[in-house]
Length: 286
Image (cartoon, rainbow, N blue to C red; front, side):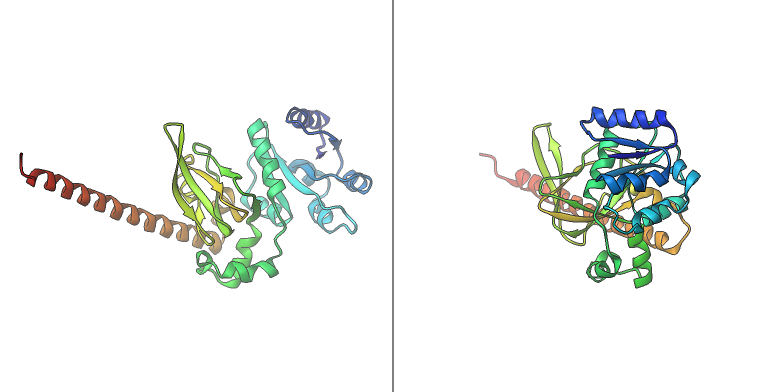
């Protein structure tokens, strides 16, 4: 792993956390230009790049990293010390950032960022848009709007039985299934897992936490090899273009439809219960 940060103490702190998590072969550099020299002589899978360092030395560093001929592909995790503007965040995603983590690092957040980057796969919009266009979830967007949306999303690969999120975890993103099946479940009495739903291609999940900011209320797990589009809440909160507004409208429509479906089921259950009570009352006494 490679760390880019202008401050040596921050490099040492990040290195220490990675070593604690069991990762080896960690190199730190303080100047963006040195990243390219290091990558020419040694292969690294992940680059932890400090947002302030990138801005301080070379504003087009990520572009150069992505376009450098002969460069061994490396996935980039952005290190931030405070919330950054939505426009900057969108640009970072477009420039190839695969995950973001904020100082001070928590171990579980560091692990999650690494997992996100490992599962992140390049998405060639020109090859993907036709397949995505087939999904009803995106039918409300024009082709131009869909391309814009895909550029601010992340494509993640999950293997069978991989956990996407756990019950009780903070909800900061939602997902659309491109391929595969996702199982939504809850633990009953901490012993038995109860399946609530099996979601197929084109379904979305995790949107409740995006809409109301609440923790996850269930577990989401990959039933088989699965490809997901991931949408970060911070991106969608930037009400600066029509795409994010239309996306929120779509999520609200889905939420309302599911709520109506739940109400219908509750009414049916109450009616069935009333019938059972009536039959019990009418039954002859022997």
